[in-house]
Structure formats: C-alpha cells, structure tokens
Figure (spheres, rainbow, N blue to C red):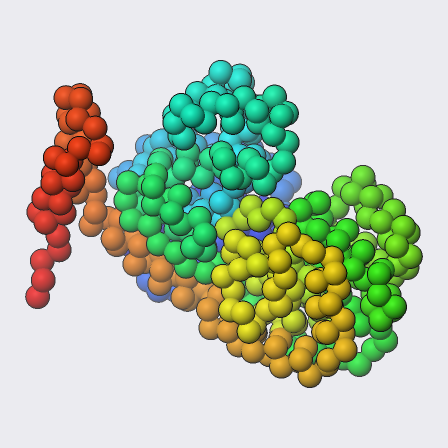
Length: 434
C-alpha cells in the first residue's frame, strides 16, 4: 500500500516516537510510506524523531495530492493543537483513517476555535451539531466556566465524536471509548493496544542501592495525582524512607504546589527532575523500583507511562479506570479510580515490603508488554483496518448518497425502511466467498 502517515514528529511528542517506530515497521513490510507532519507551525529549530522515510510538513505540501498518490491516509489525533493543528485541513482533503490517541479532545477543539478566530457561537454550534440540542446547556456551561472540571467535560462533551465523524475509519487504543467512535465514524472501527517501542532500560529490578525509588514519568499536571502519591508516602513511616522521583516537564506553579504538599506531610525525599532526554529517562527507569502511573480523570486513550513501566519490568500502579482498567489484573496493581490515598498507601507498603512480588510481577508485565505493545503487531492492525476501509468505500459512497436522498424525503434514521435499506446494501457489497 501507499501510505501517508500524518503525525507530529517533534522530539517532544510521544505520538511522534510511536509513529517513528510504526512507520519503520510498515516500510519494512513492503509498504511505500511517507510522513506528513501535522504540527501547526513548521519550526526549523524543532528537533525531530529520527526517520529514514520522506518527511513533509502539511503547510508546505499540496494536500490535493493525498487522494491520488496514496491508498490510505493515516491521521494520528491527539489533544494538543500545536502538535495536531494540521489534521483539520488533512481530514478535509482526503478520506482518512484516524488513530485516536486521546478520547478527550476538547482542548484540541478549543485550540481550533482560538487559532481560527472563531467565537462562542461556533463553539456552541459545533457541540450541538455533534451531541444534539440537549447539549447546548453543556456548551454554555463549559465556555462560561461553570463546568471547569475536565472529568465533567469528558462525560458530556469530550468532542471525540466531532472528529470521528470526519474520519472514514477509526482506531482506538482501548474499549472504553470505542463506542463513541463507532457512533460517529461511518466506516470500520477497531481497537488495539498502543504501540510502545522498547527502551534500553535493563529489565528486572534495579541494582542494589539505598532507599527504594518510586517514579512517575510524563508531564506533571494535576491529573497525574502526584500530590496523592506524596500524601500516601508521607503518611507512612515505612514509606517515608523511599525516594519519589518525578521525571518530565513541570510548570513552576505545579512544582511549588507539590513541594508545599511534601512539606505539609513531612516527606523529605521528593526529587523533581523536570524534562530529560531519552538517555536520562532510560537511566531513571533503570533506577526505579516502583512506577506510579495514576490519572484522574482519565482523558487519554492509552498511557505511554504505564506502558513504559511495564516494559521496564517494574511493578506499576494504575487506576481502575479507562485504559488502565483494561490492563491485565495480574500484571499491574490497580487502585480505585477515585484515587483513595489509604488504598494507594497500602499498595505501596505491600510492594515496598515484598521484593519477590516486585520482581515477579515486573517480569511477567514486561513479557506481556513485549508481546502485545510492539510495532509489528500494531502495523498488522493498521494493514488490516486500512484494507477494510478501502474495500468499504463503495458501500459508504452509496450509503451517503441514499442517506441524503432519504433525509431529503423526511425519513428518520429510526424508520424501519432505513434499516431494511441498510441491510440490503450490506448484502450487495458483501465480499465474495471462496
């Protein structure tokens, strides 16, 4: 197949890292792959993930070529406008297979409004068009600040369907949001675990050293529940001796907030590392004894940090919610999605006190992750879904035309005649057997 792979390629983008690995695998499998960068702006100073494939930026590329020069256009969609601002023009230019890395896309939606100079009327109109007239109260509440909680926004207007409706096929990384894609995307939808390329982190427990180290990696925003981990550690004489290391970008105000929490509970071993390069991240994972990959609310389709923890062979603590809740129960340590500090403290104490449990669970988790989260398996899913997408196009084309005519006649989607017509189309376009 001729594949156009749309992705941010910035070194700061974890989606870019995944894309570099998957496109390398697709090319090795004989496909002609080109990468189309979707960062909103083309910054010449931006460091990029390494690739041997042809790379273009969407602002300097003739998007009309997408329909004629490629069999499939795969668009990676994440909740960051600066990384994904180009996807809107690309979705308009060609039928696309959308990979939904995040289930919550309201921030991407807000960025689209802001950078295109669109006001509250367009905000409300898009939400109503996506979720129906009853969603207008939610639209007003969100933009007016009456619904500031991201968990509430995610429940009512995550805007997943807003972009799924613009895709010809869609891929989710967990089952918990697949139904949203299926409700909006006109073509095939599939679910497959996230691809997470293996790192150079030596598997197994770290070398003999002093205090045990609990580690959290990624962007240190409040929904990673780092403050809850600090409170759990600081409230236990057993756990106070542990080091808690934070590895990833952090704002000054969040740093100050977490340092204040540590001082409040008397926890003296908080180490805030900040952003690091890949080599340092490998080292910090090697030094870790326990990985904390918590979220509340869960907004992403999958968690790279949880996958990294499992691949590194470290016992990983996750919430029983969203993608995390779908991980095998015997390979991670799940706590209630509300992140109850006493429960978190009990799990940490259990892990700190049982070296064999840490080692054996980490070993089993790594074996599962190597088998399940690899680029070859992910590339196979892309191939299969793309083939179904391509063969479904005649059915989708006829269905759209007939649907438009039925709608013009005033026939509702729930009318029995619509179901009979859909069933007939399915039979007409069913693949030949034998």
